[in-house]
Image 1 (spheres, one colour):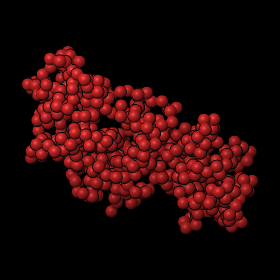
Image 2 (cartoon, rainbow, N blue to C red):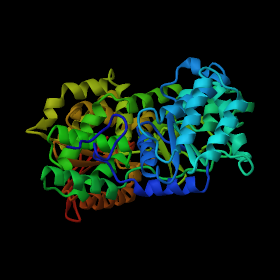
Image 3 (cartoon, rainbow, N blue to C red):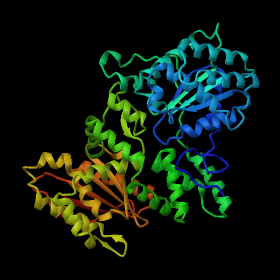
Image 4 (tube, helix red, strand yellow):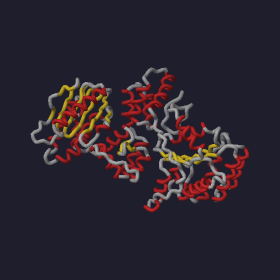
Length: 521
């Protein structure tokens, strides 16, 4: 029986996976055109799975040597001659245990003999001549796939190897060379160079400027996820709407392959329902768990404080930050698929990552009075699995008024009020409920929080009071939002700095068939 997989390569006969036929056809076209290119995506984004599928599906048309730098020891990079010998050895490994399709016997023997003769070292001239001979003698075009190139990123010998392949590429009209070379890893070659030689004058001197762009979207679509779930449903004789579930999963993950598979894996293993409640429970677990994806994301925030500061401003203050690909920390975060460009603005890549970042930033507030009070009063706000939201909002308003001077702390509260409320909310729903911020409404004045708690959804609009006309527009927007979620009641929390304001809960408002409950700080 197949299963969902989040560790290592996914294989169609062993694992449930999205059909990547269209992706393979794009790659086949690039190879047929003789292009050299890089597949650079974040960790656990399907790179290795894609390379293995290329090797299997295209093996009748091309002779594909699929090697990985992951297993090479540091000694193999000591100098270029040792690395050159290692490349030949890795190519020979491709047919050591299983036949390599489209590789002629004579060429197989030549490779084996070359490795025997160059066990430890091989000059540039010897390797280039060897590659030219096997490319010329084999009946099918030879393709080199190199996975985990990040492992070689700190070694000058690797750049020498790239320079050799580049030189052969430029002369291939007269001297045989690989039909195509594909490098796969998180970092692109420009940034590998940047890692090795951080001085400004060397940052963009890449030996791999022959590579064509590889801009293919490798995220998983809702349609692709639905087809995968349909296969699972048939295998297990289940009944659920795979299209609705797929769209929910896509909404939370933006198609990040690891997160998609992890949600499905949790639902399957824990026998959760394949519906909104099951997806939400799986998301709750993912947001709380430790995994390499989140560990690396937090590590990058520590390494690049500018990135951390920008993300905090985006998430809590609703500021719009331009996506500038020339900034190093933007390059790094985008390469790891933590952020993306949304109409020219920086956006966190998916809703699950956003929530994890909110939790990370809010964890810095655990020792504050706001967090500790909410933690102590948690049981006052929840009865029979239902959050008493009016009471929560009323108590939060009282807490702010008791803790801050609204006149003296005006500017601080205007900039940090939303972070303070989320700090208050976090210990109340922590471990059971989940929340996310609707990105379309996140700006300097307004933010909509959607809370899922034990299958019940609550929508709270946080806003800065800008007068009655603005408030009425906000109420209209909230009713439309409630209609979208098919909810009867919505909540508004306004930060108002008028001296004559009335603080606390206001009388509820009936508008467009919905009930709006508002609290004012």
